[in-house]
Length: 127
Image 1 (cartoon, helix red, strand yellow):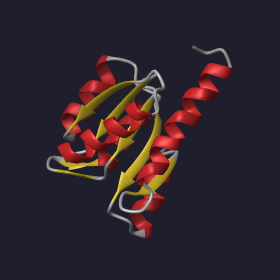
Image 2 (spheres, helix red, strand yellow):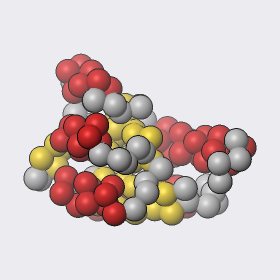
Image 3 (cartoon, one colour):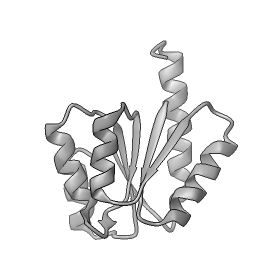
């Protein structure tokens, strides 16, 4: 399973990578820091799970969700952000995000979901 962490904060990318690594589940982790490199990574290789922030220096995670609607990439998308307005949550889900998490309070839930998805994929014989 490949997980792409798209967040402009290196600290967030590193911390999530470490938390995922501690699960001892066989997961390949990649990271990007802006919209352009996130879209490039989604185009270059299969990504199973995308952990997506909303705020980037060159655009919005909503731009990435819009892009996914027209691309061949079909990752499971978890939005992880501090931008928690009802409008942002609704728009993210409308554009195809599977889950929406509060970065300050639901950080560990992202890791739990990745493990759940990996187990589900393994059990159903897709890997």
